[in-house]
Amino acid sequence: MDFMRISRTVFVSALAVFGTSLATDAAAQGATQVAARGTPAAANLAPPSYYSAVQGVLEGNCVTCHTENPVSVGGMIAPFALTTYEDARRRAGSIARAVAADYMPPWDADIQHQGTFKNERYLSDADKQVLVDWAEAGAPMGDPSEAPAAASFAAVQVQEPTVAPDGRVWLMGIPDLVVGFDEPLLVCEEVEDWQPQVPQRVISGDLGQPRWIRGTEINAGPKVHHTVSSLLGVGTPGRGPFEFPEGWGLLMVPDQYMSISMHYHKEVGPGTEVIDDTRGGVQFYEDGTRIDHVVETRLQPYNDFVIPAGHPYYPVENVTHFDEDIYLLSMGPHAHYRGTAVRVEIQRPDRQFRETLLWVPDYDFNWQFQYELQEPILIPAGSSMITTWYYDNSNGNPYNPDPTVDVTYGAATTDEMSNSRIYFARTQPLGLVAGGPIPTEILERAHAADDRARRFAREWEDGSQSCANAAPGVASR
Ligand code: HEC
Image 1 (cartoon, rainbow, N blue to C red):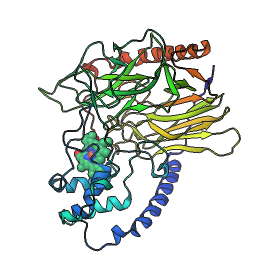
Image 2 (cartoon, rainbow, N blue to C red):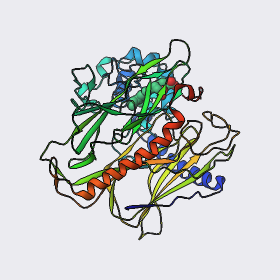
Image 3 (cartoon, rainbow, N blue to C red):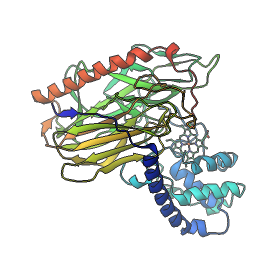
């Protein structure tokens, strides 16, 4: 077996831990604020106008999601466009609040990771200040002739969508294989937040033999806030397709177990029920493509913890040991409403200190991110990955379903989780060819992973399969 897992819970004084992270954050913030004050935008005495500054900030950071008639790849879409002066003026106050609170643009990784992850969304302090000052000045329009040329909005990425014969829209192109539910799922009236784990089957396409996955995309229905699946990756608004580096592939076996963890979020009450038929698209490498790295994924679930009632910052440590060299591709920590921060660290065998791979100081359950590294990181054999989740089980946490109970591991949103899904690959280049023979050892590994997913999912499905079991309206933003 490649992995040996030892997990333990460490009891650290909440105050000590809290104190350290506060100090670090304060230092980081101090540094960036000083930097922001020195920028021309902040030094300029005239308040920014829409055309002189605001339009550029919105175009570069917001309109991929906040756009008129967003490409309907399904799922939850941003509730309004921010593409014209009128759009922005009407919402100037809530824009300023959303960015000042770091709620928008949605991205949870700490600023220390800037440049590390794909699809990161950081709004600079200077740009944030532009939006806040503009709102305070009464959202002046300015002069359209001041507007920067459209070409300067380089951050706006346009991906041509493809419409499949059944009317579904895909950004990745027509998938080779489409997977979906056995039958469309009813999300009933009483549901505000509901997270069933739903089995999936092949809807179209051929999987008569093992195939190498190059990329995936989730085509979610309305009221789907986000999805998590071992096969399809993570689906969040604005996410788009999920692609592995060229020559890296996840091996899909013919009887592959497939399921997807849905998170529905909607208004409650008569007439609010929806039928959802979320699908996933898979693209395979063309026959003849060289495959050097087999991508694998681990959920790293850990369940041996009890979060005491009322505790404001309770740490739970989850440790995985690696006994062979791997390249780490991505990390996707997952907890529920009491999860408030998470740190992923690596302890290499030849070092005295732990190295932080990911620090999420203010975890937002509503946004599940799979943090994909720009460049895979080499983790040598003998290293440990330490994922520390911090939970706020106090009444100071507005999302806490019940601060008076001790909380343990479980599937319902009222229980907790302390997972961290990773994608990784062994380092040795294999020189395989898509469509060609696959070594037995690699097939066996794929089947073993498949068996683990099957066993784990069954346990999860039991608790959360019907609308009726959904957690009653828990506050969410
Ligand atoms: C990845 C997609 C995405 C990006 C990028 C994004 N938003 Fe949003 N935004 C959303 C979604 C989805 C919602 C509604 C759901 C929610 O509030 O969680 C939202 C909600 C909002 C709201 C309403 C918040 C509230 O209090 O209800 C404001 C204001 C907002 N966005 C402004 C912005 C601004 C300004 C930017 C750029 C700096 C931005 N957004 C970038 C997806 C996005």
